[in-house]
Length: 298
Length: 281
Image (cartoon, rainbow over all chains, first blue to last red; front, side, top):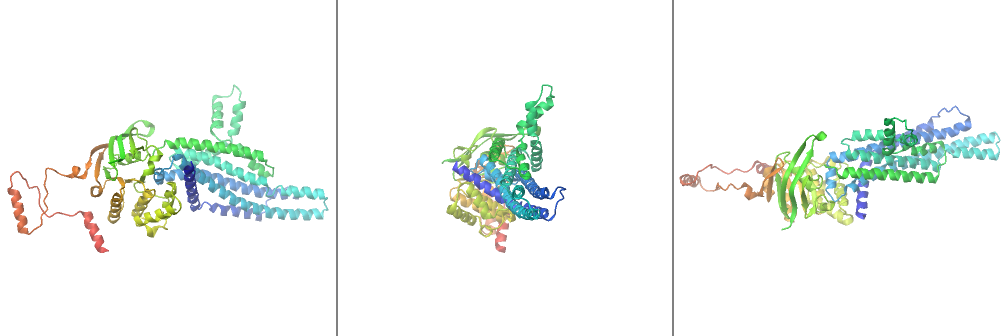
């Protein structure tokens, strides 16, 4: 068991090195540019000055977290879809599986390596976002306090304004939202891993991965439809909704990310539920991948 | 002597696309390799050599029959504790250096710390790649890739080495170095199972040879058993031209003997090339 964990960590750290040396972190430079760009250009909101200030912070979070989400999802699908077929193509897989390495350890190591890379990239982007948010929040707060002083607001009004601005800043809910992005990419990477165990091309894995990702956003609706359907429902709709709700992960669960952008408070219990569900999804996809990979011949 | 490899009635079937037809790549192959022996499996392309090796390594599941490595079923992971494998035209992670490559494979086999460090240095020295230890594997030549392949196969000190076309694409000098390396491994007691279509090389290094055609092991035995032409006698004599002529005349006159050919013995092209390249150095 200990030997197995060690092997998984060896493969994971190697996968991480491999991805880092593929210069995937180049995306961070693009992300930094996005943040700098948003700070330089004032986006028209058409709202009152008070709500415009909050809107500006929301826009900053929305753009940054949107970019983070985009990076994490693309990376999770592409990297997972790329690594396994490449090992087969280059025959490096032969030299690994000819060592005393169980196939589950190999798969788990590759999966973990991709997740480490996504986590580290998100962490670095998170640090950049927090710095940008802190600076912008302080700036906006200063402007709003100057206005409050000029208009001679009551202490209660000043306090409410302060809370309103700070609630759009670098809160724990933003951190929860970013963690939810990681959990979402963990699930989609699991899907890509499963597809890559039976697919013969990287392109097919990536296309299928994105397809599952988009369908997964309707999995919740499909399940609701399944549960609430009437007898007169067509056969196609009936079995289609069954299939989607059983096979595809329900990405509607990760709408907490939008809540975090909007400045809503995300409770710990919601996050624990999300961690649990994501963990179950990841474990199921890893086990299914193992079943497919264990019988694979090279 | 204990058996390193035991293949018993191995058959392997592959389904064609859409599973309309099945191709029998290996048909009832049985062979065994004793510990410390160098065994060569020869045959043309597509004869079933690599399929046999892959079945032995657990990369393919036999359709019928069994493969055992030191008595352990090759389908089981623990049978791989005693095997090192170098595939045909091996590729390794291009982003790793020679040293990092060996470290990665060593760690996969449970090695760590000082022991791993020492083993890496020892192997880089064995395969003459000390100068390239910090060089990215992506920049290695074919010969260097084969040698780092051998080093990774030996990292966990396996008792059995399986080599698929170990000198494919390597120039004669590099090929000779790999050959010498294989012979030195035999000297330290390693068992080697190799497949190649370079017959001269197989002849030079193998104790026993199996000849496979269309998935069927046609002949098997020691080199002497296979290549000795018992109905012919070859004499290599040295002496004056007169003495040589007399010997020929004697042979021609002898009853029951038909002189098939005579002349000065020839060296092989490979030996000549090696000799010339050494002189150039």
